Figure 1 (tube, rainbow, N blue to C red):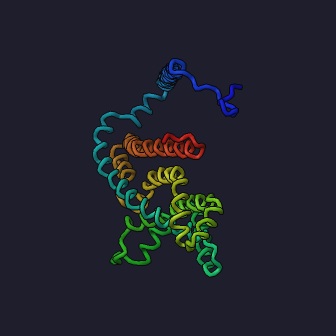
Figure 2: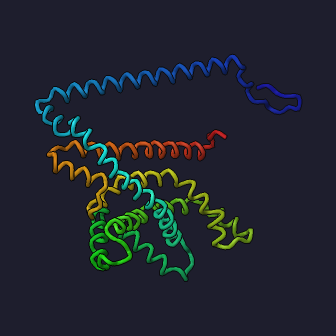
Figure 3: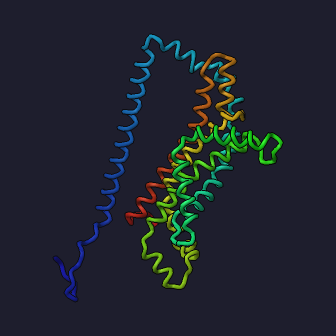
Length: 294
């Protein structure tokens, strides 16, 4: 071990510039080799899959039933116009779910004995909602509430209550994600805030919630990927969105290609959201491990 003039042990010398350059070149070559290998293996697998599927005896029938080019072109625009309704429902429901889910998580996380009824009610809501499939809630709330209020009610029709059902069900799941983030904050954070004179509300607002929200953004994105697909369940109540439009065209053409068109539209939105969720998870993992780029 080398020693400095003051007798303290010195760290190993930093690599010189040529060594760093050679290391970077080696890592770059490894990255290029990995990308090329992955691309070639993917192409080979895809070619093998196409070959095996196309050699099946019933493939021509499946191709005509699900991948008819003429039906695809005729149905694309009507389904795309209907898909805009799915997008609008998602854009309206997502913020409502975030707000309501956060409120429910705060109700479940409260420690005041006075607010025990609120905590119990929130617990019952979460357990009951998550225990029933979303499709059943669509039918129960969508048809039941509309029938109860009558068609002249200012509360809205089937589309409105379909959105309410999505907010009702997904808020239960999102609230548990928020609650996990809140409970992951170390107790010393609360104690430090209280020692500074902050009230419980101020502690939650300025200390706990900001840290909890930052930690749960990646899993929240996964929930919203699922929401983007489950928006199609609103069609059970009658609104003509992409899935319902595809079903109408299929009934007219006796061909399943419209369903493939609708599936591609949902995939075109869900895949970018999934990749964004992966990016946020990787970023959070680097941040927690202390290797995030600053």
